[in-house]
Length: 139
Image 1: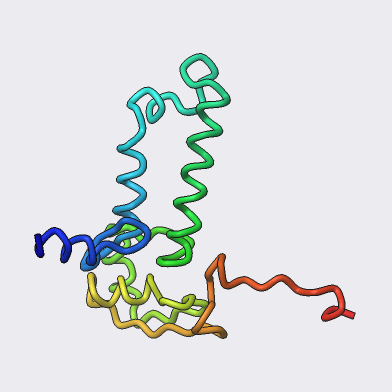
Image 2 (image 1 turned 135 degrees about the vertical axis):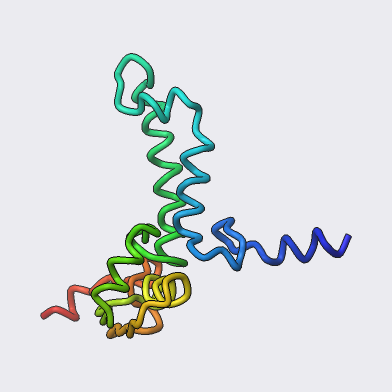
């Protein structure tokens, strides 16, 4: 009914529900816990995981990672960092990306005094927004 439709609308394209204070960390944890225990515990073991299985996991992670970079950030903030940022605040984030993920997270979750800047507020930090330079443009 309506509640299922509304909940589905709350889902972002990366599969993380809106209102989550750190959807990047949530999505990464969800991905890791979706793996079989053997893969999590012995990922680099040549006797427990085949190279093909490892490659498939890396590919799945890379596909998810691109979406998360575009919608969130390149690096994952950890709640243990909030007291550090608060102690050293005010914080100036240079190169915050199009969505200022870390700055918003610091402000909303830790009440950190933070300002964020980026040279390209529309496409900064996004994989899909990176433009290839044409050879004629560099001559």
